[in-house]
Image 1 (cartoon, rainbow over the protein chains, first blue to last red):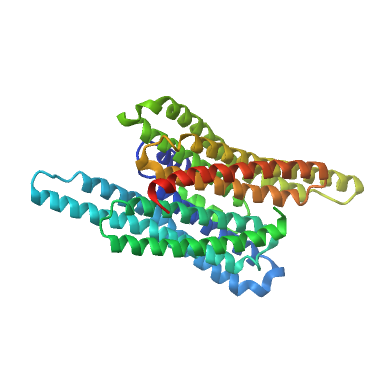
Image 2 (cartoon, rainbow over the protein chains, first blue to last red):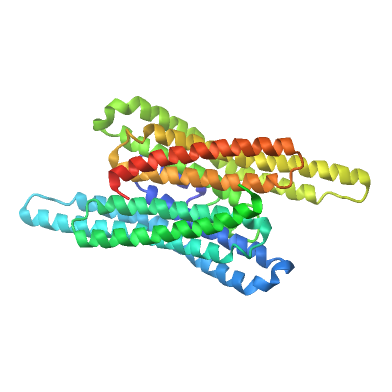
Length: 206
Length: 206
């Protein structure tokens, strides 16, 4: 368990892991945490009793997404380490070369799929934020907007990590499939982010 | 010193502080840390010796911005607490009412200026990222992009916090001035983010 300052220090260091993928997952987790808080600030208030079931449900879902994203923060570093380890495999004989190549490709797939799961988690956080934004305590509307911005940035930054790992994957069908998944997810993220930010801007200007 | 999971837990809790403002400052700090890392991954490489002075300078500046943003993460919670404390001041007599009103206005100004400083720090991180993105180690280009996305989300989320606090400030000239500052800063953030992301997308697609 690292404290926040130490985590930032590890992120800033010359070691590539933790890197952009882990930072992206943390942003998704931050977005989820803000959705939880906004639901909690609404639940605590008599004025919003009508939306209690919605808020209770959304808070639980956000809590799960926070745990998922926080887990992906660590998984992303492991996936990167596994790619580096595969590149270090021996390549003296033809057999070794083949084994190394296969090991690299397998590790790259994992290093693609982990940030893709962060994109999915980011989109899920945004769906959740959009589902509550019209009903939340107006005092917390800037927090809902901040949560959406964090989740969108996390999804987009994760997408960059998916793409850089796809560059070295030698299965065109796999690459095409993953790129199509990304496009669809990012389009959805853009729509839901706009929805949340429009509601926030309507309330507070900007 | 809180660990990352505990910090997220505190963010997610029903207490409004830490909230969106602190989360936004953490995103700016995350962006700064990624710029530091990208500079470090470029400095460690013979191939990029030409850009050593640029990278050394940028890394130092990013390190300073990380410290600034990480400090604002805590300052934002204190500023919020001070506003709440001012609202709890006695309002029995006319004198008490006047003192309370003045206390609230003073606390709201601080609660506006702290996130405005986060916006400035976010814009500074983006300027720095834009100044190095054409020269960094291409293996770290997705991290440069992730850093820009984090800094932009941090700046935009901080701006929401500035705006929600401006709503209750009763000095129109002050409000107009702060809004104008925000507009200029966010326009700059949009431009530099596009610059960094274009360079990243050129390298890795998307």
